[in-house]
Every structure is written in C-alpha cells, then in structure tokens.
Image (tube, rainbow, N blue to C red):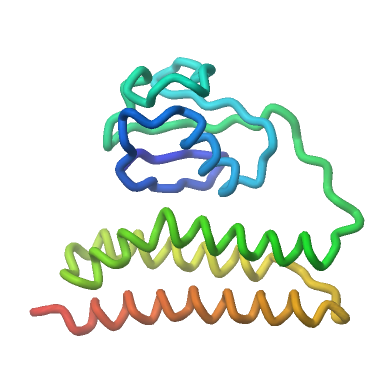
Length: 169
C-alpha cells in the first residue's frame, strides 16, 4: 500500500491500478487533505502530469508520496449548513473508499497486531476529524448527519475490535 504523507498525518492507500492516471490519486488526496492546490512528490521528483499513468511514476506498494500545500487555505468565515453536511459526507466517502476494503479483509481473517493497530488508529483519526466538524446549534440536519457519521465510524471500530477479540488464538 502506498503511503501518503501530509505534515504529521499519514494515509495508507489501497493498492492502486498502475494504469490509472495521477488525477485519480490527486482526487483521493484532495478529499483527504481538504486542499484545493498541492504538489505531490515521490522519490524526490515532482509529480506534475495528471494524465500520466501511475506506472510512469514507479509507485510501488511500499512507496511514500509527499503532499506539499501550494497555498494555505483561507478559513471560511461563513460556513453554511450544506457545506458542513458536504464535509461530513466527504469524510465518510473517503473512509469508505480507502479504509473499508482493508477493514473487510481484516474482519474476515484477523492478521497481525500491527494491522489491527493501524486500522484502529485510522478509524480513531476519522472520529477526530468528524468531531472537529462544528455545526451551529440551529443546524439540526447537519448535527443529525454528523451524529450518524460518528455512529457509523464507531460501528466500524466496534467490528474491528470484535473480530480481533474473536480471532483464533
């Protein structure tokens, strides 16, 4: 699994199709970092061409890809309820596409303690990101969406822990 590094944060990506263009990877990273503009660096080289296949950059399962923000995003002063809901949905969709396949594999056949710790940590990070989403008290729909998202992620964490407890000793 390639690892994306952004500041102190790391994201392990599922194995990527070498024929897919860089733009697919860039979209996944943009959803994760919430950055509009950033540079990708792999093996000391700047990854520029969004149309080039990932194989052109020689990305392997153990590759590390650095993310450098091109411009610091300006804080939005007037968030709307819809943008808050969209942010919650983006977090969930990213979790479902990047982490859920690994979680499903692990719950079918729990592997190492290291994999359990990695998945657990990534799920907890998701919970923290959802916790950081602030909804005004009058935004009832946004608060319900956030609550449902937290419950869903907590359910994933519970499944992970239960499969770990029930593994064959």
